[in-house]
Length: 146
Figure: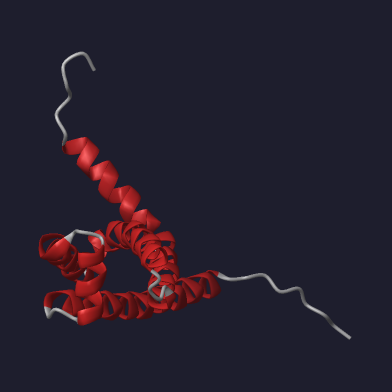
């Protein structure tokens, strides 16, 4: 018998990258839809959303602000240069949402699902986040004393 050893080729590596990219895009779409639905609930005055914000004393202004951030973040998930930072911001947002829901006795299922998806996208798109940070740093003028 002749056994040949398997060594991954360049094609295998690029195929895995393409497959990973497709998976990340699917997760980005799911996250965008999830955050879009959450924003619409806040904007349309969903009774659960209103009750949560009112019980915390935050009222409509913060509810609308968070809805706006969710809408902007949902769009940013489709802009390649902003995908990583948007997903990272959604990780922070959903951690806050989970804390609020736990404090008010609400369900955390949707927030946990969005947290996991956002974390996977943030990790998968971390290079775009690093590249954006580097680009911003390069354009920033040096401060005195630097």
